[in-house]
Amino acid sequence: MNDLVRQHTALDDSDLEWLHLLVSEWQLLSDLSFADLVLWVPTLDGTRYVSIAQMRPNTGPTSYHDDMVGHLVPRGRRPMLDAALDEGRIVREGDPEWREEVPVRVESIPVRRDGRVLGVIARNTNLLTVRTPSRLELTYLQSASDLAQMIAGGSFPFPGQQVDMDASPRAGDGLIRLDAEGIVQYASPNALSAYHRLGLAADLVGHHLGETTAQLAPSRGPVDEGLAKLASGWAPREFEVEANDGVIHLRVIPLKPKGSHIGSLVLLRDVTELRRRERELITKDATIREIHHRVKNNLQTVAALLRLQARRIGSAEGREALEEAVRRVGSIAIVHETLSQNLDERVEFDEIADRVLAMVAEISPGRVTARRTGRFGVLDAEVATPLSMVLTELLQNALEHGFGPGEQGTVEVTAVRGGTRRDARLLISVQDDGCGLPEGFDPQRAGNLGLQIVRTLVEGELGGKFDMVPASGRGTRVVLDIPVRAEKP
Image 1 (cartoon, rainbow, N blue to C red):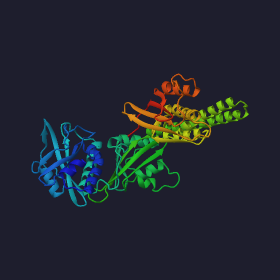
Image 2: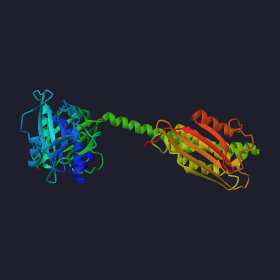
Image 3: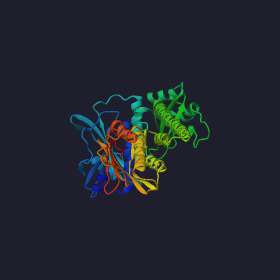
Image 4: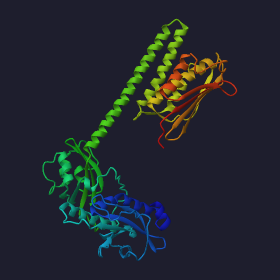
């Protein structure tokens, strides 16, 4: 739509914004009219029209099986478009057109903004299935006529009232027609069922909708506007009403076809089950976060007990083993602490990596600097937990075996996301400038407990690859290649 307007017309950005607002609303006009809508805009030289948008009804058969967007029509070929554009009025004259043996009634509605006609909506109604209209259909058609006059007068759509059409109720969900005083003139069966869900025992017709709604759902505490006023239809609003374990979403559209308020159109939808599921998800999320919080607390308690036990052991080797266990437990606790603060089972691992770096650096036998470059990104919990342990073991191994007492050096962790969305990979290297690997060292067979843990977690649990090689110059370089789920763009 933007490309067609900028390529073929003289409309500016504010005009285009108005047309976008109209197109976000006109599904309602299409459904109430039982008709297809095509928006035509005159070209820059004024000799043709270009169709920039199209809408088919959910309430009736279509008149156009082909996509009309992008079509160019010379001025004069469709006189009703010319009349609506030049005279600024709704044009209904003319006999039905025949398209593939289907009679189609064509009407033209000028689209006005600030006194200027920007384009014309062609309303095309398939007459093949026309029958004697019911009260529901008559109300639909009358409401569509009022909206069409408001579009021609420039009072619809409502400026600043952008509507989320996915969440907003539609005509088929439930419709109520009010008069100028807010009295219900007509309520569709779906609308009546929704109010029965709130506890209404009588019919709605003849009753004041605002007062009835306020009685069903009395307000609790201060509100910005009274519920009775909101539901009376004096201003465009969207709101929800909850009562009797039922929830309905309402949208109010004041009708001012000739500039004066004649009534309102109220669209409503029963969202009871939707809100119930949302509450269940919120409860589930809160429960999962609480579980992670308690696991983190329990792991910290275990770490504290191990630390206390380490202080009571006289053997240096035993004390060192318990301190290693404390760090392993601590790395898992960091992941659960992060998960307890998130709404899903994914974590930003860069923060975890930095905390693991800081935790392991505390055991540095000398003045060894640990730093991170690159980005781990967002990882699933089932990846983050074993990876935090792997990172802890590799850093601890580099600090303990790469540097002697008091020796200075650097340990650098590098992370790179790569691969495709279907085969995303995380490439990690842990490199130090220490003394390097001993001669004949085989990382795949080394009996060190830390390396055994790394191999088991990387190859078994993470499904990745692990290797340890001499770094260029001096030191050791550990390389990990782990499959991960792609980040959202």
